[in-house]
Image 1 (cartoon, rainbow, N blue to C red):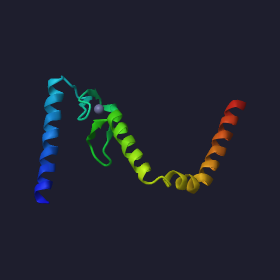
Image 2 (image 1 turned 30 degrees about the vertical axis):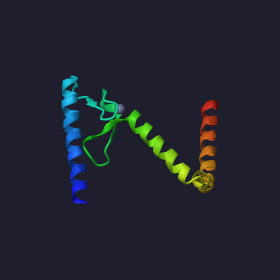
Image 3 (image 1 turned 180 degrees about the horizontal axis):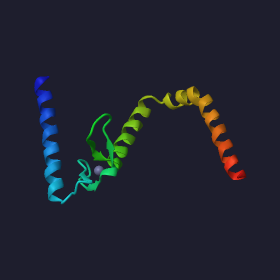
Length: 111
Ligand SMILES: [Zn+2]
């Protein structure tokens, strides 16, 4: 247990160090960041913010979305009823929202 934890921590430190060095070598500025996954230097806006944290996540949005897609697919394979259940649960709210949006769009068209 302890050893596993230690390895994880070491890996994390190593990754941040690597990202710093790689970012420095590829000439990143203050408004850019090195992505740990695709190893490109991208603008800071391409990274999500940690919740309640000063720093940004070490992965760019594209990599993050790709990864999340894989996980959602796995999750849906395990829980095939989930979408149906959620649709049923939120149907009322959805139709209400749709009505509001349609009304707003109509009013925009009128004026
Ligand atoms: Zn990336």
